[in-house]
Length: 100
Length: 496
Image 1: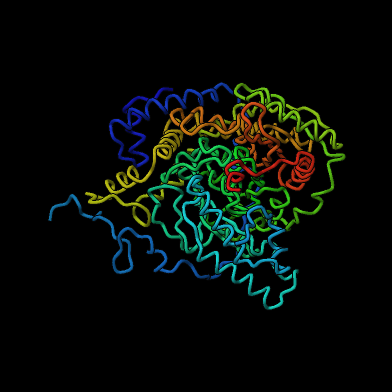
Image 2: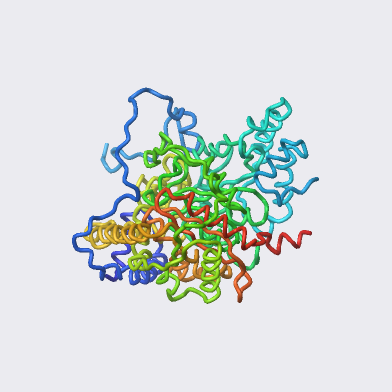
């Protein structure tokens, strides 16, 4: 399965990465080289094998549903690139393209 | 000033108890070594004298107020350092990435916290491949770490700083993380002991996640005994990590010197014969197997045929989980934010593209593709099935054997820049370590000598069944005694 340039751009959009044309071309070549190796996995006959999702058999662990302290608002905002009035500040997302 | 850089953890604690030196002096000795050699090696992203001297003072206060040796915790006064993907309040946790360059920790990683509870003294945070993506530490945004055995060569990776710091005597114990070999491979290339415990042994709370079904924290030390002591400190269930296993605490030093009589050891022959494994590595591993036989172990041979597909499965599962874990770095709550974004989508896309380095972008792209509509079954589904078959191979082998032997890495340390332009050739240096992560087993890498040709350290990987850490450590301790490897690298000897 070889990746085309437009597929690389599509994946970059899914991954939320603004790539330059040069990066797109480099990645197309590199990813195809890596996929060429990885594709050997398609040759394995794995009919009927249960997929392994976890290394160790674990049963869900539950805890008492009791209140406990979490991160303080001050700590949560300590690394905020932009904050105001105790909240993260981001560009406007509501009504951006609407008139009035 | 006293030079304590060749003292092991037990010798440091004993010296403090006897009053030969203080914990403060032990910390000063570590900083002196860092000052002398880290300009060349660059193992540290930051040093933490304030945290270190405060921790040392707590130890010295205990001693001065008449605490008995039993009351003094087992790693009291021992200089330690942590890979820079582990949170420690009072430090930045950067993952050696521009995107987290100014990120300040707001809580402590559980494994870090447990080391400090055991009395250890934190001297700094260590360089790594960005977000642990790499096998050479060249992918750090802050410049590569160099191998203390040869400054022109890589220390391995991704925990290259952790390996180099112990090798050069800048810390007695360091912690790293291992997703596909990132503890064991740099341990091998720097000639130190490096261990990945069984998946779930150590809480992953507070470490920046790479691939959550594979990641595990483990120690770097110069001796097997110090590895056992480190495991005693960091293993155990943690309510903050639901994947940490609830098993009763073990003392990993117990039975460490019991020898290997009756232990069933096997060389993994098909892995040893793999293309790309250098002759000197193959010969050293065979010699180590002979040494174990000489000590009274039974040594047989096994094959792990599915393990040859480990690399393919890993480069689907690892990037897939990473692309998901790294989605959180979006410039909103922490990390780099692009200037003058037009809208939120623009902010996400430019913040991420500006903040992540080339290898991180490569892995995110690979993982996103493998998980995308139409390809999920062919890649992620198939990889998870291959993972099951690899784990079954290990289970079969462990029905007959206690310890499996492979090289840790196919070659000794390679030159800086040698593999940087070819991602695939870099990935191949983890071919022996990756299957162990996929199966969730434990494994330790130990130095077994210098390669006949390159005169650089060769690492032996001893693999154990789930939760069989004690068995592989017992075999490693016996081997360590007969090999008597000199862990001091030339750059340190040159200091006089």
